[in-house]
Image (cartoon, rainbow, N blue to C red):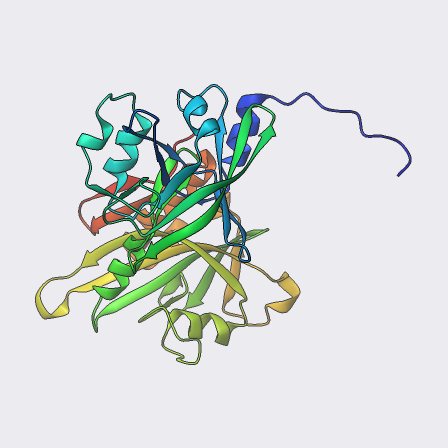
Amino acid sequence: MSEAFAEQTFDSLEFRRALGAFVTGVTVVTTVQLDGTPRGFTANSFASVSLDPPLILVCIAKSASSHEVFSATDHFAVSVLAGDQKAVSGVFASKSPDKFAQVAWRARATGAPVMDGAAATFDCKTHNIVDAGDHIILIGRVVDFVHSNASPLGYCRGAYVNFHLSQDALAATGARAQVGAILEHRDGLVLLKTKDGLQLPTGVKLEPESDTGSLRGVLAKLGLPTHLDFIFAVFESGSGPAASVHVYYRGRVTSSLAAMMDDAIHIVPLSRIPWGELRDDAVRSMLQRYVRERSEDAFGIYVGDTAAGKVQTLAHAN
């Protein structure tokens, strides 16, 4: 194109909200100051840059109190926090003067502190510092790293995301389980027509697709290419030997209506869900919450049983 694009003026708050749709990890970036004391802050602007040489980057706002220290340091470390380290993230996001006294840490090869229990840590020599608008990009050459099997702590739309909740929930289901999906198509919600009424696609476990009893297998048999996102609800029903655990994901259909040939599949607009035709009271209640949270774009995870539980917030409404 020969014409230059006119530079637009963005609403900074809306731009930040849009960027918040990208799910990131949570890190603590640290170094040692000239007087020998440690310094650190919480950041989610972390990324890999190169494998050869091994380079990573973090971004630091020029308005941050740590900007002067990190823009002059010749070494730093990045700790990728584990799912149970929200408190560590909070400490380094605060203005507390004794942050390192509140957490367990150790020094690595460069002397920079890393957090005990982190999912991964990267010890770096400063490779380059790039000016980038109201931030600097601190690029480090990794000289030492450690990683574990711990699930990482996530962050999305202003709230933490606990990825290991889904793994724990599925591991705890045992033999009696129901794993289902709340799936949206561009024209509405996917419901299945059965002799007992409408229901969501469900299986006795999540995978594999080759098992017709699993959720993936059920979706494959229906010819429903889907993408599963976060867990939406985990709850128990029944008691004693008849007790079972229900795990529901939210997700989306990735094909057109023409590709759906199974007569059992019904695509129903969220505003016209036939509540009286849903065979399960707990599923009806869960879907009513889904419709409400979908309209607010603020999802949570319900954990409890069919009578009572708690919604664990994933993202706050803007």
